[in-house]
Image 1 (cartoon, rainbow, N blue to C red):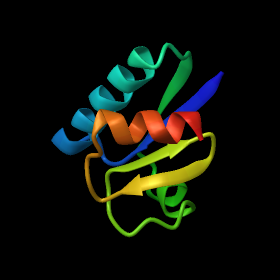
Image 2: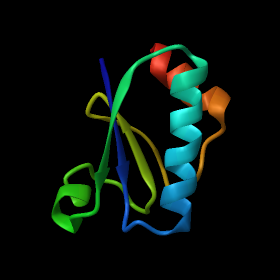
Image 3: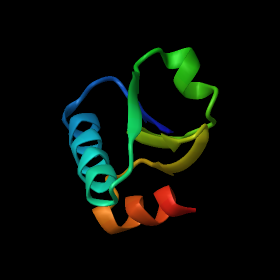
Image 4: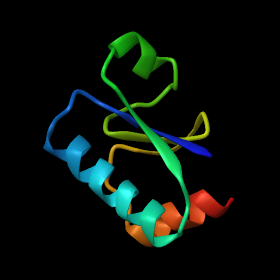
Length: 78
């Protein structure tokens, strides 16, 4: 099972990123556990410059923007 983490304070962009990621996971027919990370120390451990951040299986794949569902599906299959 995949682990998908949304890094951020819980702002509107963080919520939009989570919605895009959930739709991409569902569209790809995959199962995933979603985790929201709001603790700043935990977020900074991923060495991202701006939020929101998307982590798939402990690998930071996107930060500072909201990716498309197609991009997320590519990262899921990698």
